[in-house]
Amino acid sequence: MAQMKSSFLQSSSVQSRSLQIRKSLASWRGDYKAVLAETETAALFRRVEVAEAAIRMRIAAETEFQPHAERVELAAALAYLGVIKRERLKFTGSAF
Image (tube, rainbow, N blue to C red):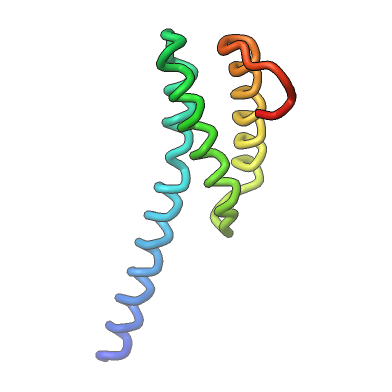
């Protein structure tokens, strides 16, 4: 009985940890949405930096919890940040 309880607690702990990982790694969406909502150019630069870092960290994390749809979403978000940098922040050149 004690082994069953221990096994259940370990399984529950693993599930809880995987949920925490998914939530923390998915936080890039909040940073990205903050970029989309920003109206002040001075604050936009910093928000773009933060969002790009969060997206790149999520891409680098590549876990089994990352569905294909999210990978597509990450690529699209990163591409759109490039558009914002060129059009709103007036970045030039190909190195973003």
